[in-house]
Image (tube, rainbow, N blue to C red; front, side, top):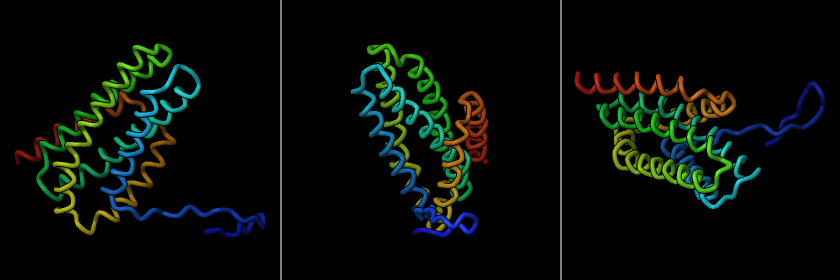
Amino acid sequence: MVARNLHFGRREPVRRKLNMNAIDLLEKQHKETLDLFEMLEKSKPGATRKQAFAKLKSSLLAHMVIEEEIFYPAVSAAQSAGESVAEGYEEHTGARGALERAGKALADEELFGVRIGVLAEMVKHHIKEERGEIFPRARKALGGELEELGDEMEARFEKAVKAASPAAKLNRMSTQRARAALENAGA
């Protein structure tokens, strides 16, 4: 779709929403993340690795933001999912630490391979748990709300990628949210 810019008379592309439901959006991001891991696991030190790792880092951190700020709270509010959601927050905390450690080893082929491999395994485990526990609950509890939630998450993801939120602040927030999810599950 193209719109006319009235100020300059030029035609500019208009960004169209994907209108993807929340779970489909998360699954799309999971696939992109797994593809980046595959590329990084085969990479050699250099500019390509740095670029791919920067993309992985920004998109993975932004993915965590939308899960923690929007998706997990919506699932918890709609249905008791406290323990599953609390575990998700904790897995994010561990993944952020592993992401930082991998970033410090970009130039060391062997150490980077080990660290990116560990991070990939953590993320694969997290995805498996979301697919098996959280996503079915979200489908059941949120139903038609998943479309609107997906639009909100997509917009927040774009902002988070641009902001590149610091991992330390996110870790503190994850811990607080995990505690709250467990408290709500016990109530």
